[in-house]
Length: 573
Ligand code: NOJ
Image (cartoon, rainbow, N blue to C red; front, side, top):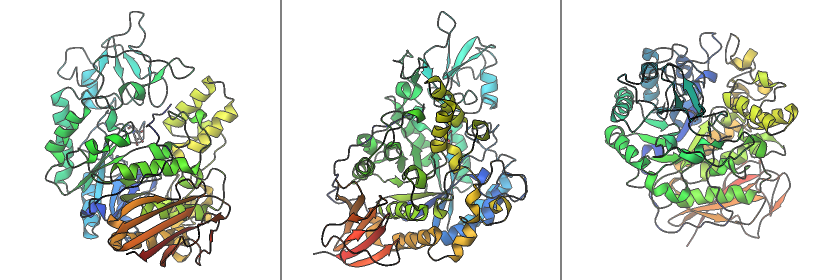
């Protein structure tokens, strides 16, 4: 069972007042997220590499990306594809060398693109020398670098917490005759941030990368670093008798003290951005995290991507949702950073299914769906994050057996669904819809074998639709998702209203259309997107002025056509 954040209600959130102007480089650009393992393989190994990213810099520049966030490229046993790090200042030989990384940073810089690293500081790999030493005895120099606890009197785990990938969050270690805590997989032991030596070592590693010239950091799972003073059982939330570790430890009071220190010791004084992955931080708390005296530049919160869930992120417990819930979540986030702070807008990342399937579960034209989401992504207030392949409209895969899936959380969720009494076919259908592998299939470059990703055997098969959905074909097609992305990114970058304008939600109760305005001075931009597969009526005179962009060739009349997205600009008094 994955974790949750409170989801906003569907009421209209109107932001008034003078908002912060977008003056920083990272507020005025689009960030592109790369999953290096699946991006571009230059060696035929079947996994992507750093040189493969360097080789595609011109493609990324042409798209309009100003920063590339790489998911972890450090040495790692790859139990969780790099989120289990065994050396914080090295490069995984699978991806290349430190020299390749330096070349990537330099080549990107020449194109005015910055490289953003992923810091995985809640946990390390169980193969990190720190952990190997820590587990060796109860009295070694690193004995309290991780979270160790004695068993309950009956020998069972110290608490009934379930790890985010399923199963107990505790694993027994015979050498110490104690359990260690892992919020995620057994191979990802949680670091003990209470120990100042741990913090100093982590901050030193981040400074190492700053010295290499990186343009920022995405900070993984950061809401879990502070643990409660007392560890106790929680009320079970599923048939396994356990409670999600998220419920028990996310965003524990005192966490901001650690993060202020992090900011002082690492981020302050550098022209970089930081974006924390912050499941568990509510919109109301955003100012403390990203306001003027906050700790990060931006925070990924989860409310809008968790709309298909009542609570928690248990794949077997999805619920039907209405557009007003998604709109409410997005509007609440916009309101949360209206005066202070800045919002990272995203619909996809390496942990989520493809957005054209996830947000349009009833099907429909995926090209139009991709353009609809692109329109929202690029015209909301904040910095847009595009995940590799999203700009092509890549879609989910659907494999026949659970064994075909690599993703550790897909296996955990599958097992949990069986425990909850679902049949194997039902459990697999949850995996089809939610699996992180949906986003991790190879990037679709062209129609050659394996989508042009590798000349070897890809670590994960390419989605078979690469024959039609691929970068080479879309580059030549003016009506493609890729061409639309290029156009709308350019529009966003050159239009000051889209960069800084005040957000206001319109037609808040409408269950088909997401509409909002952005206003600055005497200019007002209106975005209107029909999320439904039917025509949707607009109020009379709703769209005024000039049509800046639209997903259909011609302008709409008084109705928006299925999945139609438009952006208009007008002068206001
Ligand atoms: C969040 C990352 O995005 C995800 O991919 C990873 O599995 C967990 N944190 C654990 O690091």
